[in-house]
Length: 185
Image (cartoon, rainbow, N blue to C red; front, side, top):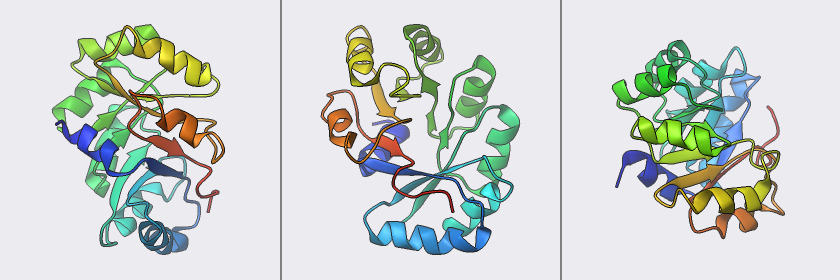
């Protein structure tokens, strides 16, 4: 089993976190792990995101990754901060090759068959379906899973507590990313 698949199977819901206040990072990680959310994605959308990764990694039982990684420079900074996996909203050859060379579990974003084919060309088979609801929702991912049955997915974007089970019921979905779990802090 690939490391990214092992990670995806660790928790059915991965909170997608936007950290604005560094003082809240570690207590938030402690609370989430205690509540059964051991895998956390910290988006690189704020000035303190990399420091939040460093602080959250100190919490026992947590697996912290970096999200919203869009280029090799951000990838390198996230790895240096201690990210244990990388999530991207899309996939470029440059970013994909850098993640593969960095030997870090990588979940690139896809929304179309062409995106998946680009990933397959790079040797990737595990993807973030993003933005999930805006890209056609459950029906779209069902349709994509047909010709790409070798792929596994983590849908993110527009998923809510009310719709999470619809996504997790799909055969090719191992987990979902959810910003509904925790509002920006």
